[in-house]
Image 1 (cartoon, rainbow, N blue to C red):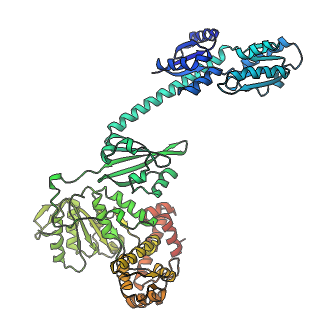
Image 2 (image 1 turned 180 degrees about the vertical axis):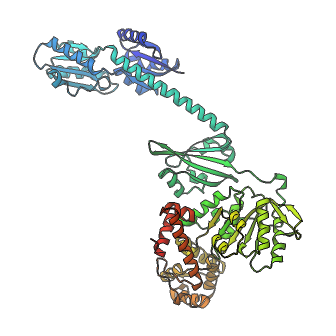
Image 3 (image 1 turned 30 degrees about the vertical axis):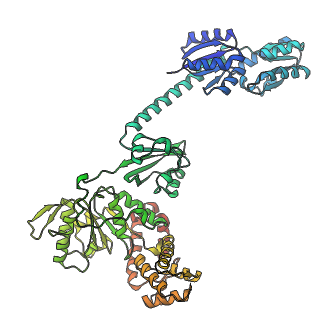
Length: 629
């Protein structure tokens, strides 16, 4: 622990300090009389001897504060001490309403605003600049020339007053001001020791924790990292300090930083640090309700397979898709991906729902790549159009996908098409990690992460008798709903622009769309989502006969490819798009889901949106669209 040094200009102050210490043992380690010209040198010597706080007064305190980095507690005359000096001054002057001048540095005095009225005097203050001693003599002479009857000040002011023939009083003090200074220094030392202890504990915690830790300031700049994080990212703390977290981890975008550093809310996500998958928790540092920065805790994802088995990939193709490859300019899609990153932590099955042509397979691959199964294979099996025997052989057979995807991920597309017998097999595989062969008694151990895509909500499938209830309860935990492109205007615009540009480059063409053509494309519902846009743009660019493509050409091609969809069923609403007859049932179902969720949560939109897997803004738009009160 450090010590407190008392450095003062007069011996009598040392005697007063000894008297105080007889009553209470303040942690004063050194007491010394010093001269102003050597104040800085004496302070530096005390610091070298272990002082952590210095108590001083007036000019000496100002000099020590100016030329050292140590905390300085200033001795300030109390109101009672100043009152005693004023009363003595009145006795010396012996005249009504005497002019009393106080000369010194402002840091030496208490508030004397009402002394004139209280003591029937005219009080004039002459404060010098901090640390400039020569100015005090000039101020004292100024007080003499302006008619002061008496001057109160230090040695310099008293000497100047004597030269001008004006009586003076030295700024003597009682033990009160010293006690105040001792008490303040003691509190300061206690706070410093607590801070040092906390800092030491935190440093030890960061050095020996099993997680990587990043500390950010309020602007998102890196203030420090622990050794484990240095190992994760392959860079030292010195290299990382002062860098923007978005440059270090591009997945942490401005929206996430705004949520954590702006709104003061926690956020969880996956990060890829130096080709290492980690689960990160971003927690704001709150001080009196203000966000002062954030702590990012990074947990390294464990690998399910041993390194020596890494090459055993079964018959799967390489998986290249990651979350950053998916269009996510819209808030609803960002929320979907946020949940997907969290679900990747689990080993439970995931249900992915979305219209034809949405990023269902891409999302499944991205989850696989960020999960504990990422070193294993990724396989997908379509169920639609297969007989009971074909489904059984393709998924559960001796050479089926379940066997081939061992230690990896199996995506079952259109799982609502599975027969009852194969639904039971899927239930057994998820629940008990066993796989029935062609004969019911033939079993094998299976360890795969199962994901399924569905063409209707789980609840509706159960009500219609198309899904076993035991399988329903297994699948209903982790659900993801991919919003269609027509509900993601930012992503739709980006997809159209990118696809048209890629088509032009692929075929050596150069075409531009008029504003009317762009507007028409943005208003079209695109029920086939990504796939429909890819095929349509290919046809549009290949058959374009003019450099400029207008809305007439676009509308004609839409009608040619997709019939009278646009003329007969124009949707009234913000998107201004066409709606197919077969989509009406889906619209009614979605409106019903919203109403039931709102009733369940007492009208709370935030909880309703969370249950439905959409943002509050998307929920509000859907409520307006379906006229839900």
